[in-house]
Length: 393
Image 1 (cartoon, rainbow, N blue to C red):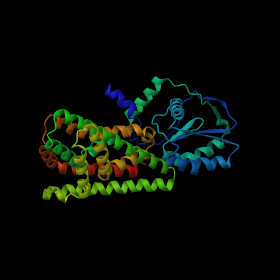
Image 2: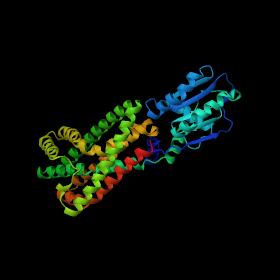
Image 3: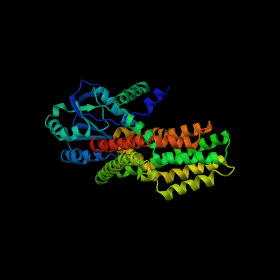
Image 4: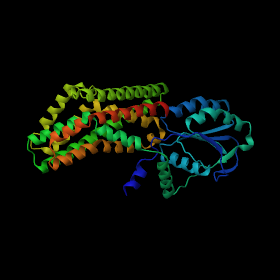
């Protein structure tokens, strides 16, 4: 059951869009000769690469050949656009699909690099061969089962391992772990019953999940909106590359320093002392009263905002990566839900262990014992995000 649900949720993740152009088999969409060359372009409405292709190749060709070209642009973020894309991929026998795609009467181009390289040449070829102009039907009748089958196929082709790893690593971020340790120790000093620990743990975790998700959705929408400006798109992309690379390098340095000194104060990538004190004050102030559920929700909200300065080190580059990959942008909110669930998994585990009597000092010792490994893995994930953003967008 879980595997089937994941197939529906995590379509299009971290796709390495292959570039291909090939003659298709005779398809059902072709009916008869047309008066104009019909070009069908599929992409996202706010996709920076799509905007570049439209303004550098498609629009100039259409403007200089207004009486010869019928340019049809479809937004794959809509159901109708996505369904038509799947239908044409079937008709044209597309083996390696990509959300940025151009269909000509009897061939196609997939992926931004292939379109940039061959788009203008193919348009010129068809303009010089009007006998190849064909009427293309836009009537789409796809069964739900067929769409689900297509989604499952793409899920197999693409991998969500990177987001899975990023979400889990963000959840065991030393900043988040430090807050968990203080929370568990605070509950222990107040001698809360197991039932009270469970209520606080579930409400706190739920509040963290919702707050972090809303922060992610807000960042996703802002970055996506800015991405339609090509210069801004490049600024965001390379800023994320630089940020992830620098933080990843600092994480490796932290691992080296801590391994040598065994002193947590030598770690550079951690919450500032003033923020830590503020988090401790929020936890102490809201979980000391009798309104446990309300206090836990408020605490989760405020603590998540305060921690964002540290936990965002992984979150922000991952969101940028989602906006740069059309497959991720298409159902980005689903991936954000998945990422945020993974983010709170370690917190859920700690809360459950606290319910069963785990002591805070044991959690602290376990964390310190594995801190070098955590920092190294944290650095690997960030460097990996930086590399992927640099070469795959």
